[in-house]
Image 1 (cartoon, rainbow, N blue to C red):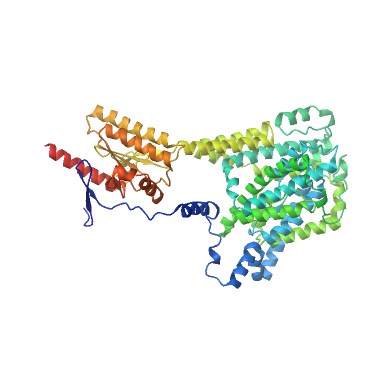
Image 2 (tube, one colour):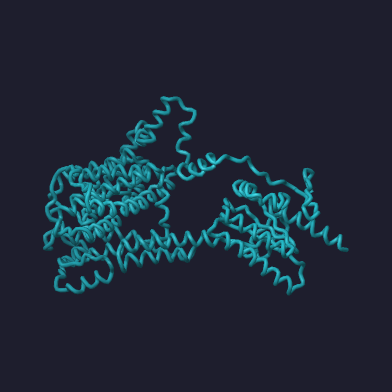
Length: 610
């Protein structure tokens, strides 16, 4: 053994050699402990570290850059960047303008409000946002979601004025919720929608959106307001007499222009965004309805927007602060609600085009906004003769990219539970409604979290031949079990929700091993080692479970030992007096050292009996 080894005599008279003693770190008072936990919850990314050791002037400059990220890159802006951003901005504007007209239809608002939403919000984001690549504007899923939820409150055909006001109200509350989540650093709430659930939700929403466009493609006037597949099909085939072959040909093939159909986009008034702060409902039942729609839209818009920003940031090797992005989204939607816009966020299709066009900074959003402004001031009369079937085809083309079959197949291969979340979200949107699909996605995500928390992974450990390494015997079938010793690893924090399961699982492993040994006349188990390396924390219920486990093992004449408990775990074991009861000599540095010592004790016991 090592030269620094020590010995400790147990209450049973055994001398246990200690190769390395597991130390109990210095304890913190209750305020330090709670403060540390809160800091980790809200400030895990250490946003204030950049201010440490700086002069007051430097801190002031850094504060301004923190609040207004544009101040960080605008001093370094040059002509080469401007050219690249002009190209990118004009490119995404050419994509945004027709999409905005179509997405406004999905939201149930006039087409011009879609253009408004690609003017003010991108300008605000350029000042407050930190992503270089993201392109801001209306998106298909949020537009469909808003249209579906708002129509449950007001019919846009019978009362278009109040419907539009409700849309502004929902956008206002969306901005409040988004900014609030960012300011109070509560962005983690958006992470309860798993990637799999989002893939399914997006695919279901994409098909739902595409089906909704059959109204424009077929030129049906009496079309259902429901979004589920059955209702849409019933409406389509129940109005065959309204089908217009010219609309079908134009919409699907883009072979002719304008006048061949009966239904047009209609007049779009010229001019910049009118002020709409007076149109927002700040009280009453419609304000409550707007808040409900705004909250749901805020979560979906943030989930999509922040994910897009992080995706392209990873491709370009820079970092964005999720909470700052939420503030940026919130401020831009607040400003948008005051200027006749509805909810805007990051668009994946436009952001991808932006990235591929060689964008350098958020100035591309400013360029896009300028192009949209020119459109609003000069070109809007031209859209009067754009057939609705053309807009329907544009929307279908845009949303088909949301169906990611490759991602769904990968989810199926990796995790069947994840695929269930994906499928559940898709089925909910496709056969019922967008909000039910969203609810199913959230519920399945929560069920998965609860399952992983309450049923954590555990493993029996064996020795990898020729090494001192101990690994899962299921993963490494050639790993050998040590006679007289059972080593088990717990792969999660131990809380009230899983402590009984872990207690029972360990005893189940022991029972299985004892049955195996009884059939093969192997050496009986005398030591049970629990590897606590992956256990990041433990609560009172977890300690009680170990106390009960120790009593059960003692009745079977088996000694309990721990390997490599972390700082938080060893402190709580010590505070509960369980460490003193068990004996610190039974807490080892590694599984290897624990088995080394236990094997030595087994050999000593065998030699004494001889």
